[in-house]
Length: 263
Image 1 (cartoon, rainbow, N blue to C red):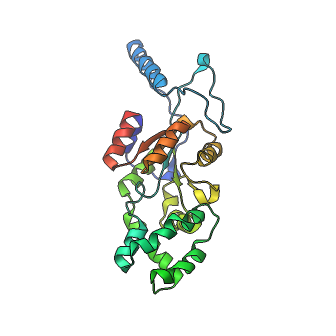
Image 2 (cartoon, rainbow, N blue to C red; image 1 turned 90 degrees about the vertical axis):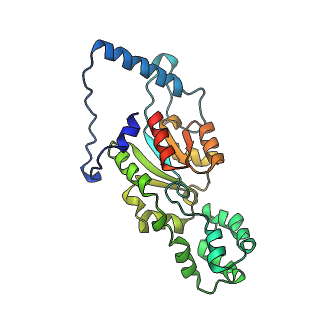
Image 3 (tube, rainbow, N blue to C red; image 1 turned 120 degrees about the vertical axis):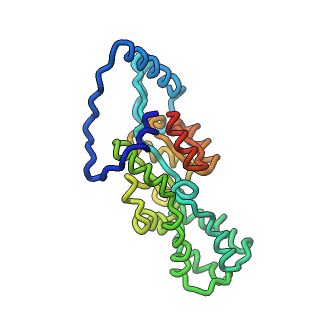
């Protein structure tokens, strides 16, 4: 219930965050016993079953278990932070280009762009004439990115601000090539809402590759189970859970609130 309560709090300016630990309220003996019982249940629920790969901090022994707190929350972009659909479908519909002509690019070399192995501008130059697109490549990229800001999930972004106001870090975790990642962070203004971005082009690995998750936990210096992860792809969610994170399939803002309420 703790995280869910954050969504109900009034937003405070990030610059005025008080990062000091909150002083605990005194409790009666009966209340303490109830709290201890709930804590014990919570620990058992999320107690790690085995060590997870990657150079992460040690988890401690059975005789020295600590309450595992939520230290960071990761958010996917498309289908979570934004509500836009596939650009290939939009391009096909709005520019009257057969979808079968477009898909080979997105199923092929675009994956290399997301890994930082190919340049988006260069690769679009090679295919736009085949697509029948009449504008130049820069216009095509601008057209591609133009629906990001209008499709931002404002309710979710606002909730992120409130969560960060309580000293829980929030990050973007996305499979993106450099141009779109920079547009999201700078032009769309996501840098005003999140603590950082983990983009696949910089990591050299894409979700659900274990190398991607290794990079994230090592950068954050957190245990996997200290991280909550929301993604719109079930395969990625399953892989993140197998890695040790607490990952959830994002389907709607209402379901997202329910997940936070159950933590």
